[in-house]
Length: 437
Image (cartoon, rainbow, N blue to C red; front, side, top):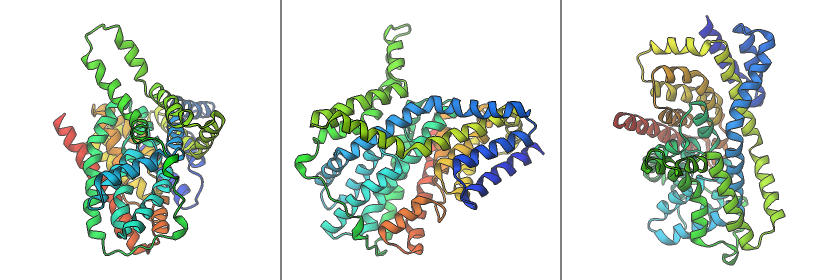
């Protein structure tokens, strides 16, 4: 009966978001309170549990997510993203321009949130399409596949970063595993799959072509690449350097402090403020205004994440998490596959990859602990599942359809199928790593 109650609460959450179009943050709060009441948590404790769950999640993530948004905004507005795209295109040439777009999407996708990355990169895609008279889907889908995969798999993006915290995983190790899995997923869902889409005729709307910055206004090539990739570099160094140090080394505490993801992202933003801002003549006040706008862009994402923490805490305090673990433990299916499947089903119902991943976390966490599943791989399994089955209730689906001026049929043939391919490849990659580790 308890598990049935939880399932009904999850169903209510899905219906509130997808059918009644209620804001996801409000939906999480309402369902958390209803779950607390129906599961027998004393009324005086419900509000405290909700606040504790929200605080636990937000306290660990607010620096990472807000500084990540600031970095992405500066990379975009400074022209660094445009410069990276130009370097990739000139390096690979017209013959291999598709691969240039993939690598550009991957590099830019690391610091940029998906929505920002999409709006930024689509005009660059269209400029290449018009300049070289190429098929828009063939050129654009690989880059957007790279953006989507980084959004679903790699910290410091909101959902993977939140899953790292909730599953008590290691941010640097998850990023390392995620990059190993992301590359084949992008290749299959991007350049290889796009070869079958050359017959889809897309007429990108001219209104979405934006003015590019003049060459003299762009930052240098190496500085643009270095700044965009700096979070990855520092997190990787912080994860693996301690393994090379002798036991009791006085350097270890310093590396541990500097390798904390929040400290890493703060350092990166401070460096980028100089390299992409002050060093290029931008005023501090203008840079700070950019950062303020960046935080406004991701405010709702932060609220949704904190709402998911409230539901998880209710499940923990009512003892439901342990009961779910005992029930799921009797199912003959690998926890990694189960986590992927639950996330995929919620993504299909709700449309939001972030909501799908964070909702799954509260359900699968107790089983993951009981089965001693690698938490880093569980982050990636759930992240891969959260990318599955994009359709008409997903904002990304409509962004792609409208920007590329496609029919619904062709949007399903291209975008929806690409998302399913990268989600499936992600699971395959996780299971291969699980077998090797």
